[in-house]
Image (cartoon, rainbow, N blue to C red):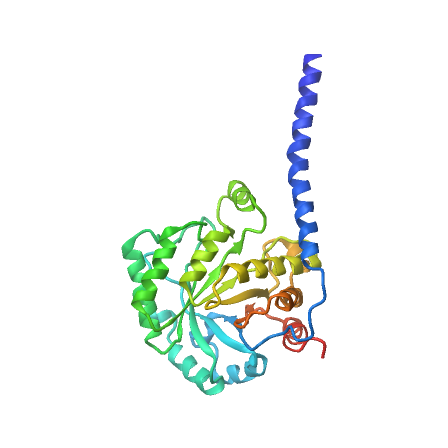
Length: 335
């Protein structure tokens, strides 16, 4: 009898362990689907403030001005190009040999794309054993990072685009890096890639407990970062949403939160997934440039924001379908 009771209790406990996360997940998806309800206004579309993450081949010699000429027709509504020019070494040093053609690319861009801002995309390399993270708590490492930023901006870039992953919620050293960068290059544009904003209370804590590293930032931390920079691009992909409409709602929720938290002086961009090797297979079905655009259109229909747009990730993985969706769903929707 005692053994039978123990087994029943164990089974009940197992059911609770399985059921609670499942109920929370289903509830979350239902809320996100509701976030996608509505009809965008006819005027909700690109305002010419979009961005594109671009691969390393543009500054290491594999791409030429001819390649940029061919890409040019797709960039009519781009305001910023983030060109991968790193990564930083483990000590924070930036090897100039990683981007030997930076001046050439800048000259091409100034000729082919006048008025477009060009920023080096700078981050770190982390291997499968989670080795390679930059120790931002170390003043010497931060000094090396900033020295590299100063040197590359001196080549003619309009600023820097930092992309360090993961940055744990509340990381004071990252904030210190942004403050020190501002002091070191006061006239340069400071742009960053942002983790996703915690969508529901408890998501951040639950994720960190289960997975062990950051995917989300709290609203307060996102706001603090946004206050320190000129531009923040929210990486609204790898969302783990299983349905297209749920992903559209995910982007809409992230945009609404970002618009509310970021000051008007900070350019807010929503990442659009122009790639097809998501970490979770279901995301390849759910996530698309089209659904990111539709989610954004819903939000700017409700809350117009002057300086916002989509940031496409990434040029070397984008397909013809991705570019068609960018054009038909965002640049000229309804045409």
